[in-house]
Length: 119
Image (cartoon, rainbow, N blue to C red):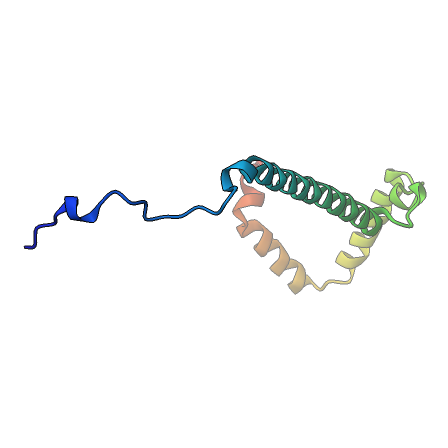
């Protein structure tokens, strides 16, 4: 292994600094900080405006052009239930005896439907 002689190297500075570097350093750093703050503020406003625009677009697609009458029908629920019951009666009346037996067996074997039924 080779021994190094530190006395031979000397005490000269291996790096050089441009003239006036330390005098202008605080001003340059403040300029960089100001640029970063402006960029952060710009990103914040861009994100907020994008979110607001997305909310408006979603609102337009979900509720745009609809009135309260479209969302809440004026027909009472009893009439709707009656018409559904009438439709089911009409459907069941068209089934044959074999189809009715198959439906009964299917629903009787369903555990979730027979779990709470009284026998």
